[in-house]
Image 1 (tube, rainbow, N blue to C red):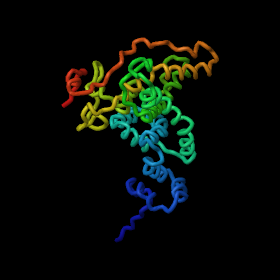
Image 2: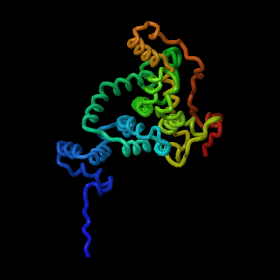
Image 3: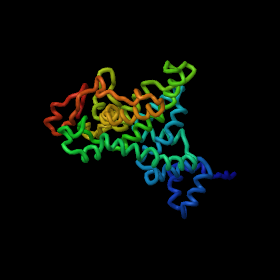
Image 4: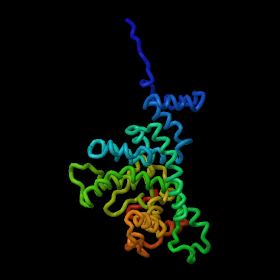
Length: 303
């Protein structure tokens, strides 16, 4: 007795589907194939992401994070899967979003336009607050050239998308808060916990200060993700420190004060405090081995 096996496109592994664009004759065929079903659209988008959705994988995560977040929120099992994905860093979150979200051609067109209308202008402003434009375009940088000098290593595009992804992941939480008039949302409205937000900050906004943990905060998992061996903590980015500088600097606060004034029409909303309370002193990144030997954090382990 013979058995006939029917092979369809849905039975092929994603690794093979992702290779198909290389065998298509032109972009028109790629577009038609992508619009034929969600399976091809997701795989073709993933395969072409480094070229068309740079910086990869941040751009596609920002595009799909809200859908993936809404799939997980309010369900303990799904939230646990989200936490597991976050521990893999931005690459883990990317795989999670691919599995639980999708993009239409209309979404892709909207993303292309958003890059020029929103992403690029915001990245340029962040570069002027904490990046190379800020550092190199100012004379006497450390001697009064800027009001808030700081030792920063900033990737402006990455910082921009870290902010956007956070908003996309947890935007519905803020919407629920605003709908409740600033009070705690009712139990019937599911929102993500603070623990989920901290997991995102810890693993998707990696920073060497997280490596050893802090009082009340466990060190991050080193099974995979940005803190996994053989990483040397000295090679970790300082992304959390960068975002902190951005959020407390006057240029950022003036930008948002201007937006609030535009919405409310109240002159008072356009004013900012000269300095924010409880802002730590400027931090200088250790420059050499001797400096690192004096630098310590709770449970900081450089082995």
